[in-house]
Amino acid sequence: MSHPPTEPPARRRAAVLGHPVAHSLSPTLHRAAYAALGLSTWSYDALDTTEEQLPGLVAALGPEWAGLSLTMPLKQTVLPLLDHVEPLAEVVGAVNTVLVQQVGSGRPVLTGANTDVHGIVAALGEGLAPATGPAPHRTAAVLGAGATAASTLAALAQLGCATPVVYVRSMARIGPLMRAAHRMGVEPRYASLESAAAEIPRADLVVSTLPPHGADPLAAALDGCTPHGVLLDVAYDPRPTALAAAWHRGGGTVVGGERMLLHQAAEQVRLMTGLPGPLAAMDAALTARLG
Image (cartoon, rainbow, N blue to C red):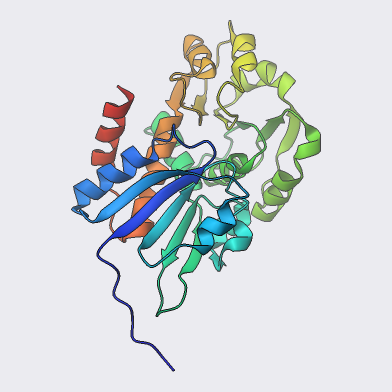
């Protein structure tokens, strides 16, 4: 027996999940977007959620939910909990966005997406402006081997670099990233993080996906170097990070991690609401929040 379509509830919810998550700028960005779009019945919260708690929270999602933003350590944990995974997220092996769609009277349908790739491409584009398109001989380096590093490989491929160097703390932990790179058709070289200081100043693009303070030893080793490329440090607390400050002192171009967050959040808003993310309003709220 078929059921008539269910009207969406007047109140819609979205949230960012992660552990820890209290520091997240996502509520600032999404709430600013809802205000600019006139979505007065929409709310957005930060919910501290561990990997162990995620299945129960996902199972309890009701029709009032529009979507979830996921941060560490949940971007891969969520995969088996979803009904569908969009092709880009499947290839990357990481989901940072869950779309919750109510169909009939049954449980919501959950679709995983990845807006980190969009955010990284757009953020690096700010540093590369006006030449934001692919370049045939562009060189790149990635620091770290987690879920965000996989998204970075996809973003770099879009910018014309399919042979980046990935610097990691432990070669024993790069299996998932190697498999993601193979699915993308990307062919990185893997090297020890200890060798990064001597090599990354020559790269055109450098993306650090290390956690806050994870790149501090590298930053100290870069003092006196003269990088010529663009650095995106996805960490944004403290601001600037030690790595960003060292890169800037050497004359390189720095793009703060909050720029990636801005662009990926605008794409999340579009996916969750069906309306274009109001980038200017979200940017103004971000600037005000960061002081």
